[in-house]
Image (cartoon, rainbow, N blue to C red; front, side, top):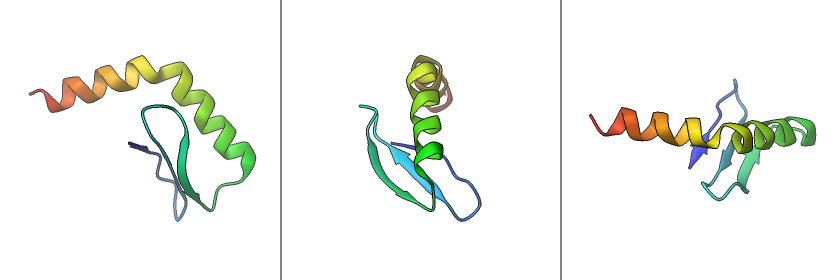
Length: 54
């Protein structure tokens, strides 16, 4: 699960790109986070595997 912390607000997306939950984010912010995850998913996954494989 990917978490995007912002002071006192969070949104969690599962790897299947759907919103697991959010706290304090409006619809525009959720759409923007979803857009970024969809467009950078490969980079996010590669960085994740690179970080945790060492």
